[in-house]
Image 1 (cartoon, one colour):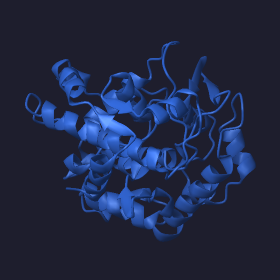
Image 2 (spheres, one colour):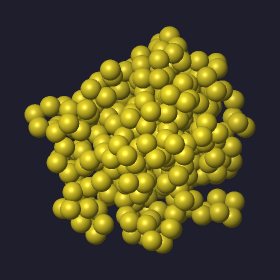
Image 3 (spheres, one colour):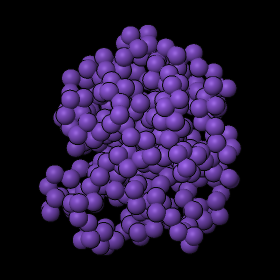
Image 4 (cartoon, one colour):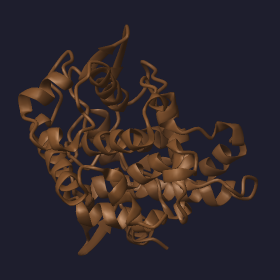
Length: 318
């Protein structure tokens, strides 16, 4: 069992604010079809297939370095080819738009020297993107490491993992401090590694398990604990919140990063996904957590005016 599953299981077993509904998991699995499996980024606003393989790696690195905490009133939104994009779609669209305008976003040396004004131009939308300073700091740090240690080529970093997804994950976490995602809970350290796991998953799926995507042990990745997936799990009835937590979430009160409630939401997300995977493997033996994760995230993009809010936590973790 991975350290993410092991440590989040302790949280789920001791949770006071978040519960997993097994009956709703069964209902979900009974209605799930193999055709639902789709890599979330392939449905995005920018077509990454127009990039060469090394640029694809750099795009995924830049995106996953800066993709977190988009919520706000009003929510940050950008226009891209006549469409309004927000959240992760907005970041992908912003990066794509700037690449089309010949901004050297995939050049690690250029990124390592980028300032806040430049990144504010890159992400220009209806409002300033939240945590702009933090995004720039992370991106500069990541780019500088790749520029200095790997001659500006992320594929050289990638090769050190020797085709092992878990070695790649560990290498990302130890090399880039901002990808190390953990929280304390009842005296223990709980690991999530949301952005690092998503980066590995995105590489594997974008390359269809071939070339740079030829990674063993991909089945050991877990769900990526963000704010959209617990939201859809709650909407499906798979996750339920205590009265006090539900009141905070539904009234858009900020849940502090690292708080008991937030850690339980994230741990419940990972284990709900894991339990879904275990049940679905009886009819789809090849399904992995990353496939369920992507399906749930894509489900969360369908919005209704009657929807309850998702939990609000201001953090660079997700």
